[in-house]
Image (tube, rainbow, N blue to C red):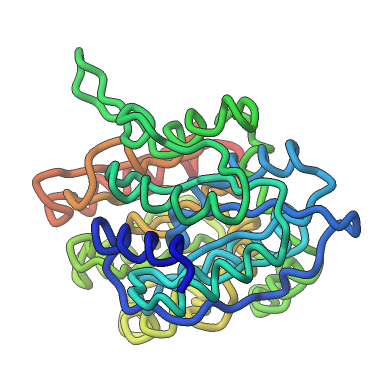
Length: 372
């Protein structure tokens, strides 16, 4: 057996991620520029993690415009989490993905992945990893360097973790940390440039959104996402129901007919159906009906979005929809807060259940009062 593969196996035992592992598979990684050049991007995470890294993906595309850009990524981390390509698509910033067998201990699985990476002959592998320990970074580097030179490796603790302001105790955003890690090898990233968050939605995705919204006949609507894969982040069915009634009443007082769109996974439909009667007006429950990027195309047209700290919130902000985000103590303040003047975040370290319906309504009303 190749000594280097055995070495990687040993490193896996030092600092492996939890998981069940699996075989390395390829998704449409043969598309892209026909130059024969390839760059691989190592990025793990789910929908929200992917959106946080979107400006970095754009920077990598600018640095390697003539390369086929393939992401080495994990499978969904939870039943309701979307895979990376469901967020990025395969027509713009990246062209495909290879599955990284998270938590794998099998030498044969790791060897097969290494063989596949080497066969692609990448010019570089860009290390766009989430915050992780030094042993995990070393393990990753030992493995990836066997296939190609590795760029933007987060050797120092300052690069591996979000900075904390010593004066205020406020933690920097994960998007900011990621931008710092690639600045030297890839180039600068402007997180406040709206183009940095461009999902590059296709005409087909926008047409799918138009078909889904056809029952509204062009009238204005707001969107909501009440699901979460983290129970601690759940505002609760009672509060969501009371909020829908309060927002619906407020919009009725302003005049006009405003529809409600409920987005989410198939598992969110039961709650949506139960609470739909609290809305004074037409309701479209699209939970489970649209792909994530099609949902983003719906959000492009919405007057407002409100939801938990989850992927749909981050996609909503990315497409410029005025958004209210409800955050629990699951994560520290600021780290995962979206960027933009069109977002309002209510973050309660005492628990999401301490956020009142009136607080959420006031945040929504503030955004609705602004021109869209």
